[in-house]
Image (cartoon, rainbow, N blue to C red):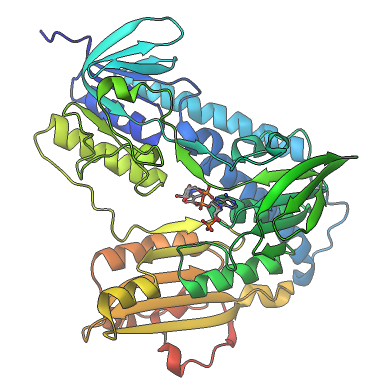
Length: 462
Ligand code: NDP
């Protein structure tokens, strides 16, 4: 009989923690999962899921407007934010309940309390004061929104708040040029809110392929988002009926709501990591090896708290690899390369593999870039000038495909399948001998020409 209360104690019932907890319980391990908030974590409760519903909501607005071009007469269309908000929250509650049930059904104890380390095998549950011991501890506490210190920052909201607004503002100012800022700018603009997105750089989505970044700038502008580049806020002041935000170049913007989307940080403060000898880096991220093991042999960490690749499916895969490593005597170092992902701007961005600068660094001149830009067929009758951008990067004489980047309708769906191709190491010749599906937007990916030969602005495609 083990001298510990549990074989595995998981701190955090988000995507990674719940997957690992459930799998360990299925192996017959005695498992507890502690959660201070609602089960489901960032993705289910205040991230991917409610955000995607808001994207759908905004897309309906666009579809209603554009339906006129397809012969529809749409009268008295109105948007009711509280109705959408409450519907989303009700679905979030249902999903959160499913997360709790999954654990319980598999025999894991869900402890709805915050847990903090006492030592490397012991956690204290802060509400009840109870101390619990475990042979193995998995930290899966995720991250939380962060904003820089600034005069008046208490007036700003962050992404957690955006799902629960009492009412839609008439005007919003979103600070940041990353995932969250760009996605929410698209959402609010889609709801008819006068949206300004202010970013300290010159192209949105730092870290993405430069041409994708240009295309996303166009997407935001096409959605009537007022983009301001090269500025950082220095002060937020309450004014009659709203706020005035001052920027470092002296400009001022009046708005009804200020949304700081300036990044997320690992949620490690106050966790008592020092009591357990678990080390963090300068951003507060837990330092782990390729098996997600911390500096302590019995303590592991997965998901956003490790700040490797902050995506839900990655946290889940890291959690699964942890189970293999720790409980199945099958060490697995999860491979973080070629992971397809999407940014849900409107239309979205879908990417997998290397950007052009990354490929150039790795392969020098031994690479070829294929691109196209065209107005999708659907947009023609809709009267939408938005164009779709596609880029494919190959390396070597064999032309192995090492990167695909799409900005356009359904790109988040398309890139999932293309991720398989890149992961499988397929070549441009494999793409070329694949027959097109016509008329679709995705068919362009099997007929791409090198960028140099490409005259852009191709005719409409489905
Ligand atoms: P990001 O890191 O993507 O963006 C943060 C933005 O804030 C950047 O534009 C950054 O500028 C800017 N910024 C940072 N500090 C300051 C400052 N002091 N003053 C002004 N601007 C500042 O973070 P997000 O919060 O948007 O997203 C966090 C992570 O969550 C993402 O990296 C992603 O992994 C995940 N996520 C994934 C989604 C998806 O898969 N669709 C959706 C949402 C989040 P700069 O670029 O110059 O550094």
